[in-house]
Amino acid sequence: MKPLEILSSIPPWAKAAPETILDSPAFAMPCQIGDKGGVLRRAQVDPSGAAMLALSISFGDEPHTLCLSRSPAFTELDKVWDSRADVPDALILALVERECGPLFQFLENAVRKQMRLVGIAAEPVDGSSRDMVSFQVGDIVFSVTRSASVLSAFGLLRNLDLSHESIREQQLSAMIEYASFALSAEDIASLAPGDALLLPEIDSVPPRVFVAGRFVVDANGVAPYAADSLVHVLAQGEDGIALGNVFDAVETPSPPPSAAVGTQLRVVKDGRLLASGRLDRLAGQLAFFVE
View 1 (tube, rainbow, N blue to C red):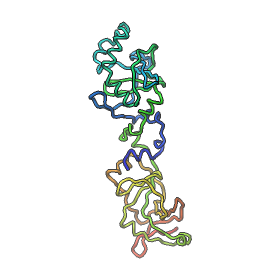
View 2 (view 1 turned 180 degrees about the horizontal axis):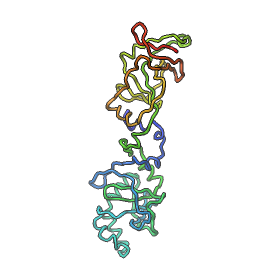
View 3 (view 1 turned 180 degrees about the vertical axis):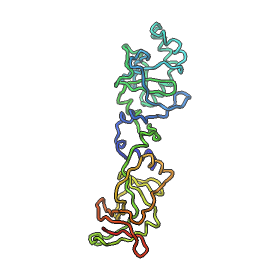
View 4 (view 1 turned 30 degrees about the vertical axis):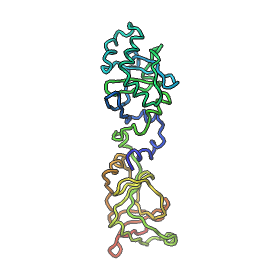
């Protein structure tokens, strides 16, 4: 499994709404504006709206508002920024169309609907309101209407930075498995304190880790969890594992150490506890002793 596949299989990300993804501190969308590549991130803007140029635009037939902050990336627009209230709207719009074309093209490609510049917004707009979502890439800061089209275009799991601490530090439940094997229903039914099950696998097979009941981390990396009919010998308690460590195991698997004599274990089948006990030796071989 790849890190993105792992993320998409666990709560809260498995069914995360686009707005949840977009509002995550890990949001970081690779983008191309004109001939410049960059990373689009969330931004804070002036709540008064005074420092922004509010434009009426549309994506397809849907009306939206786009607010632009002053930016050196828009050279000619920057020259008239302080006096734009005295500049005819037609001239402002001409400058916007000429200098913001790459940004408009990026937005059109992202939303996948034709974008059209309608004109300058009739009323001031608070770019920091909950009705808007603000972004920054390089020197360009802008806000756009928080519509379903915008949310679904940007709020995608692939736009999260999986190296961000808010993602990597998420804790998941983990169970260490030291051995697994087939055991007949008769043998299971007859298990009693004092019985022993030989576990030669512990000397030869590295342990596995079941993570969040969804995937398995072992010496080969990370794979989806698949239920089976085997008996599993697990560590007595559950541990926690950081999601970042699971990501790392994709490229550099690092199984936990094998169980030592005296380790408390449990035997489970189909999620049902069959027996608890300890690891010890029987005739020189490792074995699970039922307690």
